[in-house]
Image (cartoon, rainbow, N blue to C red; front, side):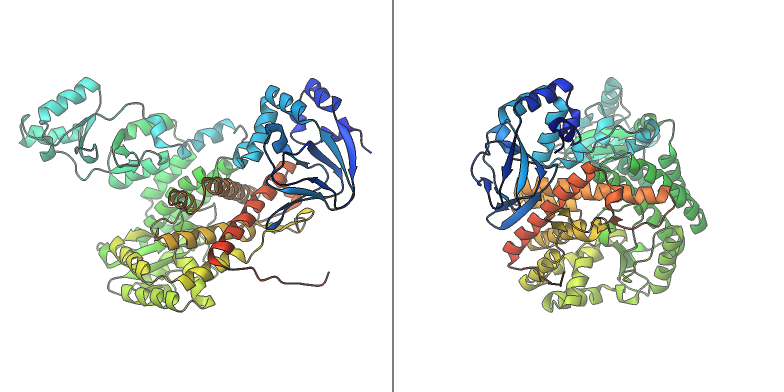
Length: 606
């Protein structure tokens, strides 16, 4: 038997302990053999010890059955150090040898060692992404600035006035506060317009200081949420050709103003992402975009390897991808009247959850005219610049997905009323629809129709689809990991599909982003705050892992896929992946109960 010290120091997070702290734990350590079927502790009871498995196998069970299996090097009974009861029953499934750790002593060491304590707190609270945080390289950290919330570079409250304020008074207030703009607001501080130094030129040319500001203000004012990224703010300014952007809070009230100079000062000297993004906006040909996109993928891959949060990085990727697609639409279509159609995204792009190489998932809804020819050019151009074609053909170049509004209405009505497997598959694709370019009212008409025609049976079958792929968690950990586990199929799909049906049931059709869906469902009381937190952490970690896997493939010039293998993962990644897949499994059980569906169990000979 390996000596306790030698065995324990190999296990993270015990490697974080000092020699003195390790001696403190070992001083009270005991060893015990538990025979098969022995109950170490019951649900609802405080575990008497912290158990470290040396050999054998222990199962954790709740009222629904097995929830985890623990083998060599794994800990259980951690809740005992906080004096709390266990939510599960621990049973030895084989003859099992455990090291027994004193909960009081364990807690004393936790209180002394911040890193040791943070690790266990993060595991218990399922804050997986906190555990993986690493210090990024200097240059990469600079480029990662784009994923910061824009409010973090705004240091002043907005200078505001009412519509009835005179231009002279407004200009005097701007001078007094040392700002280049004043936000014109209503009685609830919601922005109605903005008066800038440029607008004051109009006063000099054709007005008087006594005139009201609403005569010369720019309106409607361009706004972004205070939690938008710096990239979002920069994109909004460039698209609108403006130098001032009003930030708003969750109630739509003005809470700040960011200028183009604020962003430039914060980002200078210019790094690869901003330089390439500017080139995207100015590109005049598909060939030019092809070269730019190749460089963009490399820059984004380097940022991804620095391990920023997936939820933050994907917001930057969405801004970049949207700009590229919009630029191609403008180059290829060259259409002045965009009221005749709307170009929509589905899939990860529809959910604003793009990764480095996102397949094309798009469609076109038309008011009049035939747009198939131009759509073919757009899809071919997107493929040339690096967006692979959708293997399933869900693209606007497919006549089936390039139709007048009336045909789309007939589609959705039929899919909901007759939810055969093919129609359920179509719903799982098109319920993530997001308008990108053109006439948004066409898309809004479809949403209004969905509210009317959605059926309980269709929702039940969508939920059934979300629970069919069982996470590969077995007695000895993650099954088949040596051959590879598909993160998209086993971890991402069940969460995305489950959230989609829950938001459909609630009528939250305009929300497509998974994180926003979780938060909206929590607000409605559909899922608990704990479930929302655990889903966010698990989904974020699995996507982080997938993003790094893709980034590594790009940097090593290999073909990208979604399959990770044991040799690619650290012990810490293995632990967090297992914990994340357990959350996926728990979410599926929630869906099974809510929609009265079950998983088809396939048996095969060993």
